[in-house]
Image (tube, rainbow, N blue to C red; front, side):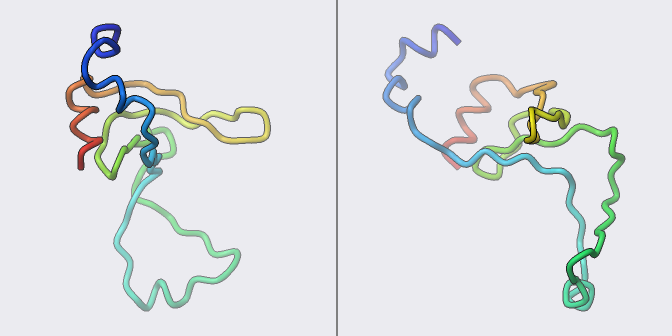
Length: 92
């Protein structure tokens, strides 16, 4: 990462981008969505033990697991894509 810090990309390093942690996804019918109400539980086809996906600009850049940080949730990063792939995700 040190070599990245001395490149012409330096001005871009302070840009803010959307960082999303995806628990899971599924397809639902409009009727199922219409029936949603407070207290409803949506089951996903993913084990609670599986890694969460970390995305930048909707592009996967790594995986992690959920952790509790005080009263908040966080993500422990378990793996990341190589730097060049992470940078490509910034441009999408």
